[in-house]
Length: 82
View 1 (cartoon, rainbow, N blue to C red):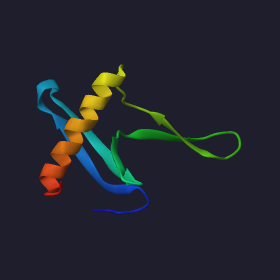
View 2: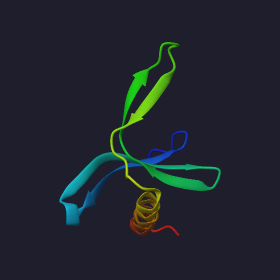
View 3: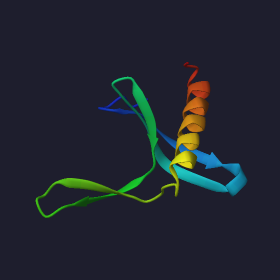
């Protein structure tokens, strides 16, 4: 458990059906809301501000939502939380 800012923990997610492993996904929480963030590429804009570009994303909102719910449910089951 990391517990820094919104970050709860980093995880490696496995999707056996696709033979896919996503390394370094982030389980985040803020103001009672939680989500899984996929790895992103950091870059700096011309004003020196840190920005992040998605590396992995779903092509539709419904699939993304279902993935979030399923992944968070699995994380809670593993962590023994509700």
